[in-house]
Image (tube, rainbow, N blue to C red; front, side, top):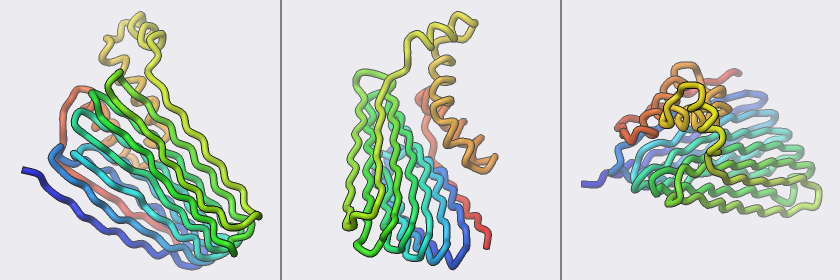
Length: 239
């Protein structure tokens, strides 16, 4: 039997406020996760998303930030882990409406045992968003020859006064790195898990301590082929 999760999160960040929304999701492998998340930022506001997506059969998740005020800012940091039978289609959308707005998207994806990871983003710079700047970076790590990783960026820039950049990297675990760790007495399985944990470390550092521990445990379980059936989230902010 398949299950469906159709969640919704809406955030409002007022003038000169700063809000961070952190979430780690770990669904059972028969879950269809269709999640809608959106934030709107007023003048001088900052929204920070930190997201981890694990489990589920299919996930579609693209948190959206509307930078309405001058000079508001958005940051998105995310990681996904797609294992056997999983198709995780995730990313972010930023709409630059105000002047001198800033956005940064940094994502990491891991695919294993035929899992499919897709990064999908949209950067929209409206005509009046003079001085907008956006940087997009996505890195993918494939652990075998049957997994897949795709990058689908979209940029709609309607002003000449904008600075928009995108970079993507896709790679595999180095055999030399695994050999080096094994020469220090670490098993091959532990060596690969250590390398994957290191790959995910920049995201882990952005999470609250208890969530970072949970994410690292989920990575270890995924590397061993275990599954989970929970989801958790945390909202923190400063006015």
